[in-house]
Structure formats: C-alpha cells, structure tokens
Image (cartoon, rainbow over all chains, first blue to last red; front, side, top):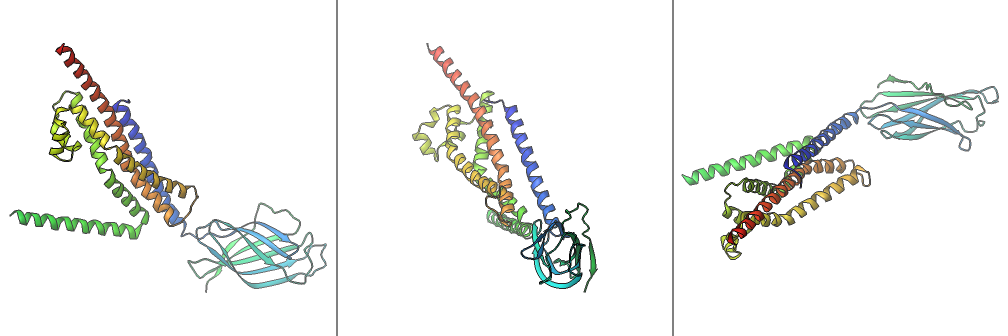
Length: 165
Length: 187
C-alpha cells in the first residue's frame, strides 16, 4: 500500500489536471462562441473548368463562424489567342449558394450557353457577391481564372464593401 | 419559543432554496455549460456524499487507532448496524475497533461500485461526443461540462478511498499484533 503522502500527491496531481481540463474547456467554449459571431470572407482555394457542363467549379472556403450566402455572380470572358470566341460580359446572375462556416463548398459558375469550350489562354474574371447575417451590405470576391495556367499561389481575390442599401 | 425558532429556520431554508434556484436559473439562461457544470458537481456530490464522509471518517478513526488514541466503539458500531438492537444481536460490542472499521468499509463497497458505474457511463457519453462518434452541437458541450463537474467529487472519493485503505490496513496490522501479544501473555 502507498504511503499517505504519496496518495495525497497523486490526488493533488489528478486534481491539478482536472482543474486544467475545466479551465481549458470553459476558455475554449467562450472563444468558440466569440468566433462564431465573426463573419469571414470566402477564399477561393481552386478553380477547375468542367468541359461537359461548360462551367467553372470553384472550391470556396468560409473561414469565419457565420454562414455566408452568395447572391450574385458575374464574370468577364476574355478570349486567348487560340480561341475564336469574342469577349463577353455576363452580369447580375442571381444565385443562392450558402457557404457553411469552416467548410469548403463547391460553387458553380455557368458560362454563356452556346459559346465555345474554353481554350488554353482564355481568361474568366469572376465576381461573387455575398451577404452575411449581421448586415445588409453586399460584399464581393473577385477571382481571375486563366485556362491552362496552373493556379498561382498569389490569389487576387479581394474583398471590399461595395456599398449598402 | 422552540416553535418560533423552527419557523424562522424553515423560512430561512425556503429563502435559501429560492435564491439557489434563482441563481441556477440565471446561470442556465446565460450559459448552459456553466449550469451543466454546477448540476454535475452538485448531483454527483449528492451520491458521493456517503462515500466521501464514510471514507474520510474511516481514514480519520483508523489513523487515530494506529496512534493509540481512544476511539468510541459505539459510534462506529452505529455505522455498521442500522439500530442498537441489531448491533446487540450481531454482538458488535465484542468486536475490536479495527474489525468494525473494516466492516464499515466493506459496507460502502456497493455504493462505491454504483457511483463509479454512474460516472463511467457519463464519461463514456462525453468521450463519444468528444470523438464525434455521436455529435450534437447542443448536447456535446453540455455533457462534457456535466462530466467535468462530476469529476470533482469522483476524484475526492477515489483519493479518500486510497487513504482509508492505507490507514485501515495499518490499523488491522496493529490489531493483529495486539491479539498475538494477548495470546502470548495467556500462555
């Protein structure tokens, strides 16, 4: 059998760890609750052209704690040297895509129907307009996509308030 | 006079209970985890109470016996038998202090078992939430807070159990030595 001093030290250590666990738990809960009320801005992790659907698929991460909703898409098509298609602009394409907090979501951008498939060198500058539950303001993310060029690290996605109602 | 004091005590008790409920309700409204923590602590303490004070007293009395202090045998016999008649029928007054303490400690065994079982179930639940085997945004943190609150009396029970076991084994060794001494003197 152990000596009483050893028992007390053992129990003391266990109590210390228990107190640590309790403190960590409550701190974590407080921080998690605070973070859950901060809206983030979506980050485009990768963009891929889907030939069959004639659409570009964006993988978007919502790093904040609040759900974001994309309400509008618009894009500018700039043809490369190999394409016969003319440049065109599509704006104010209403969509409703919810980005849940902390998760990567796939967002589809349909190119103009009846146009040619994308060739290497074609560029699509897409603008996603999104809202979050805390305000009525509209925010946007702009993502440049060039066909055949590997996704570069320096992402040009910019966030800026476009103006509230 | 006695009546008035009794009524005053009752009113004070009712006020204390109402105040406690109010504080708990406020805690529930503001932070469900804190409320769960308090409930886990109080609820498990309720079940651990007999064990905590039982093991604590056994450790105290056994250490007093080892140091050669006078221990009231009737007090210990009361804990082993439910009534003085039962104590008489079981001839508890003929037994030594160390034996009575050992009987008391083994009478606590089923309570200890049930208590640890209850805590283990809650702990298992919390671990399942923690490992995302089952998940719920609402109940996960609440169960975890309950377990953390319940862990405090559990550690106390465990520590006092170890301590009482240590002192009781010392007391039993001393009692056996005394018994052998008496036998030698008789010869």
